[in-house]
Length: 193
Image 1 (cartoon, rainbow, N blue to C red):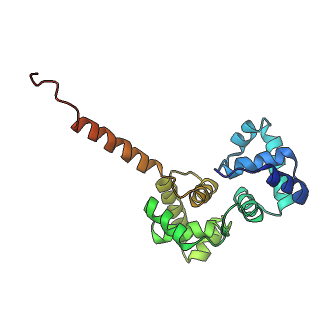
Image 2 (cartoon, rainbow, N blue to C red; image 1 turned 90 degrees about the vertical axis):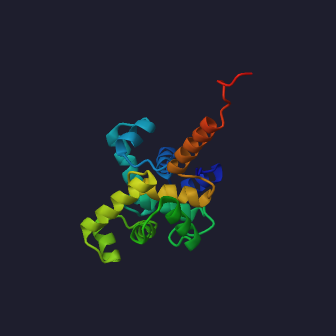
């Protein structure tokens, strides 16, 4: 998990004039939390107050969505060894293989890493219809166990930062294999001794 250090927090306060509450929201965005209701609850705010804090963050960082906030903060603070806008091909290929993504789904991920989130804009970049983008988006969420663009990109970032992480499917397969081996190697209690 990417965590902001005291140094990072002080930098954000000085450079962007962010309040402690706004920094809390950014930390929640980095965790992949996108839904305003959940953000309000986790920050101990009303929904209206949460939306106001989010709006202030957008204005201070000169962005217009939560994904753009995360990408800007990660690049500004150099939290990765590479620019998220141009991730190394090996990391993209590793993520593609881990989640069995198609070439088009991988292309969509790369576009999202550049904070392009509107379906129409993505469709133009990929030379596809808007409803095709919707289909690719749904498929990639299903394969990566995510449910929105922010959680997808934060998952990619987290796995890029820590390549030893495995997806939930791999973990479930390992548990099943472990149980199968245990059943096959259990001692035979019916034999005469």
